Image (spheres, rainbow, N blue to C red):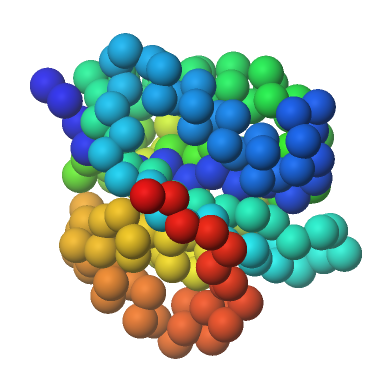
Length: 189
């Protein structure tokens, strides 16, 4: 069964491919060549300040909706291979990077389970993560740099745990305050 999946792409330092925009475009081209993945919508690219705040360069971010029968685990492995191929080096969480591909949502599933998902969301260490996919992304609902691009590709997607659409999530006070720092760069047609 084909799943409707939301992903986020971002980067803030040049790679061997070129600028962060060039690197994101290369990652999209790789995804477009995959026979088992259909890209059904792409947002514009946005320039955003790093979260958490730091002295890193601004990020370039975008959202993409894909359709595939690949499992969440297979997608995560594919994304990691693309990141490495585009010059990503292992580093600290939230460090500057050439490319980051996040699995934001896998249809309406909560993975690996609702209880584990909630534990990751509630963890006092914001860098808490598991080796398996955790979807929806545990901080998706708190990040303007994720929600603003998602408004273009999936405004009506409903968070399976929070029971709110992307549109409703983007209207939260914290996200609205952060949205001013999310600036549209280019439009994909």
